[in-house]
Image: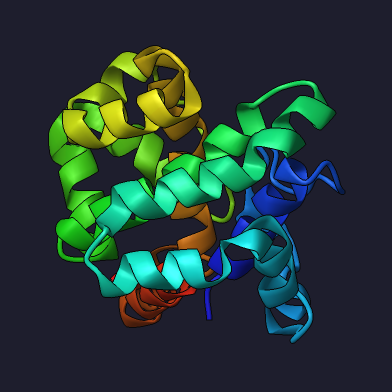
Length: 210
């Protein structure tokens, strides 16, 4: 099992103004997050809190083909008051771009395909630092470097729904992408890609994103 569920839980807690466990640059491969991932009251209850008032609305969007835009609209609407309470929307943006990053990995054919894409895009050194559990610090990625990877329409959706400039959305992706790759590779190069891909799908299913 990967550490993806624990990462999502940590970012969700940040969005709720709770404990902060997902800080950029801290290599999560070195953290013992397995227990949190296996805690039945963990991810489910945290996502339930973040997405709590979605209720039938999110399910209706899923059933009627509302797609990513509709789900994100509901998620961001639910986070609106939280962002004001915590004095900033950065954590809300991180939660908003999570499904975009996970869907992008799937689009590349899964974890290995995403790593290959990153290497071909000139981000091989950075990606290696995210994968390698012996690396104490995740190498950062510049906003300009992630722009070439993601669909402009998806970025525009998030920008419109958060009332944030597209540059802020790209910056949020640049923050969360290293964390996600890190969390999917707890055993470094020997991590199980099949498990990673399954965990990605499970998270997207939790968000009712098919």
